[in-house]
Length: 256
Image (cartoon, rainbow, N blue to C red; front, top):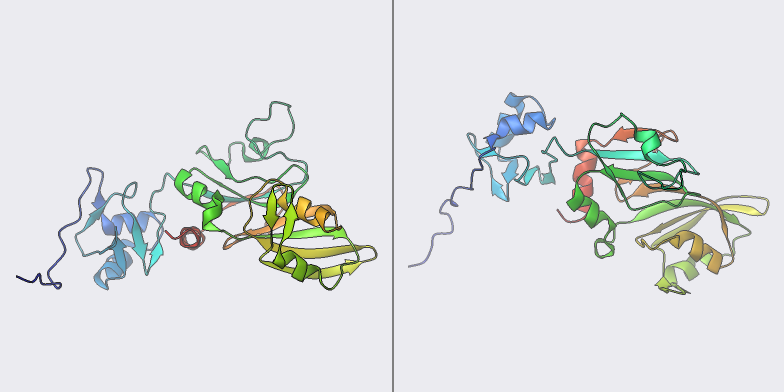
């Protein structure tokens, strides 16, 4: 007997800590409970891949919830923060040499203990992501997910016309080849040039080593974006929590 594909799917498991779905959505900042009920009624919410219905429950710490196809960071225990790391700050929470570290800037601003996603060397500055979501952090750092990162670099000029083609074609370093996804000259001033590079590499000092290899050593380096998250006008040394839309965009960037 052929199975009827239109038959309803079996009920999803309900965990002990589950709450009414509209309450979970409202707590995550989607909207009022009434507005969240309307989203569920209009079949715009899924839980673990299943279209939700009014009356469904969900556990925000275990269930994967999407609204209009975008992953919702429903677990309120998880925090996602952007920081504009100043130059001279080491990317660690406890530096054994007593240098200025991330913890000096976070202090009591966050109740939860967070970890940095990747690193910026002490002489570099710009966007750094902090979170206690270990699974997302791992995916953002893993090279297989190819999350793009953009840097603004001040380098020795002048810049030859063919440098962009050379960098996108690939340059051989001592630990293997590297190529950028995009490159452009932003401006020039005397013997110095500002260039923008985008790449999905995560090797240590990769931008500095790459530009030194092609004869244009970096004197200043600022990371301006990680995947969909932009540094924007965030002031140096400041932090801000990512919006739900930004966190959803990060999940999308790693295929969640």
